[in-house]
Structures are given as C-alpha cells and as structure tokens.
Image (tube, rainbow, N blue to C red; front, side, top):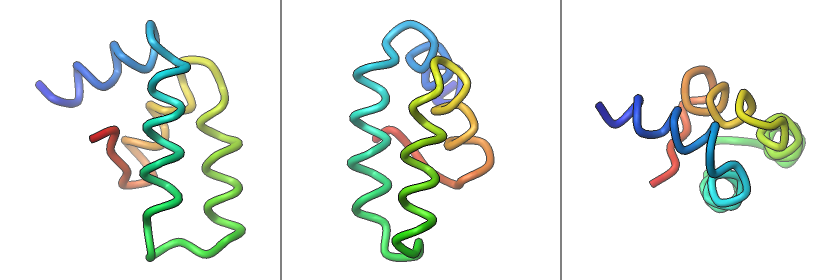
Length: 62
C-alpha cells in the first residue's frame, strides 16, 4: 500500500516528492558523492524518476 501511495505522489506531486527524495539521498551514508548526484538527477525526471528511486535505488520518501 505504501508503494502505491508513493507512486501516486511521484506522478501528481512531483516537486514535493523530488524534495523528499533529495533529502533522503543526501542523508544516505551508503552512497558515494557521485551516486548521490546521479540519483538526484534521475529523480528530477517527471513522474518516473522518484518511482525508479523507490523501486531500484532502495530509497523512500519518508
């Protein structure tokens, strides 16, 4: 259920979700600086970027 809510948020509230993703990415200690930069750029893609981050990157919005 949480995944479905995150996907809907990513599609309709992209600016809010992007900020939440960036906060999560910057706070992760398991990523290098380059990986963080790449994930921030990927999550900028409208709708699909945050979904990829949640599904593939092991991230979360909250």
